[in-house]
Amino acid sequence: MIRKTFATLAVVCCMVGGFSSYSTNAATTYTYYKVKKGDTLYKLAKTYKTTISALKSLNRRKSDVLVAGETIKVPLLAAASSAKPKASSSSQKRTISISAEERKLMAQLVHAETGFSEPFAGKVEVALVILNRVKHPAFPKTIKGVIYQKTRSGYAFVPVKTGKLTRIQPTKQDYAAVDKALSLFPNDRRGSLYFYNPKITKDKWMLSRPVTIRIGNHVFAK
Image (cartoon, rainbow, N blue to C red; front, side, top):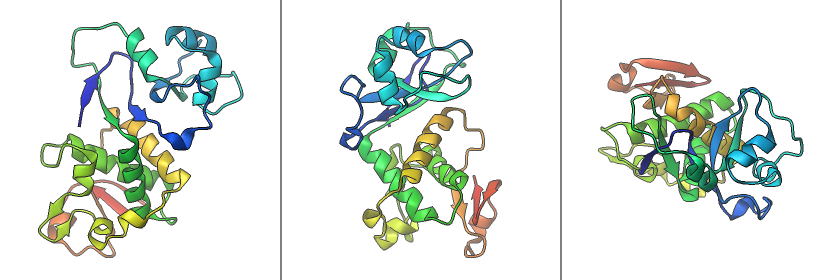
């Protein structure tokens, strides 16, 4: 995993050809920006050296109205070039960049583990488990490494062990859950590293882990 510190960036995602409906003016990579009171598309376009139409295309929106507190996408390259270098400090956030392949792989695992029965929040938490493992020293340092991590019983995740993962076609909701997790990840305080269905799991070690949250049929722990 490559970690970079930016003064004003949240999280980086790589876009793929599947988003070809975006305007050609829209950047192929983006980062998340939390809208502040007084922000306008004109102001943000000027700050990030892009255009209003490119921002609207990148965010798939027709309206020019911004709401304080909402999260929108801004072109990564423009954002990176406009950010002034600052000395490192404990207040700066470390971010995680992922490729389009990794984003799809995460969405596949999210769907394989949650299907259509678990709530959106549960999907987001599963995605956060992956990201938290990447950051944790006890796990592999890449998203692919975490998902395909081998264990004594085969693989860390059952859908990988059964071969189901590669056949999964993620839904828009699965991708949205991954994107939401990416935006939350820098500030995620729960730090969930595991999840299980208490009605199925008999593993004493897993059942002994500190519970972080319960969502749907899953218990999340660390």
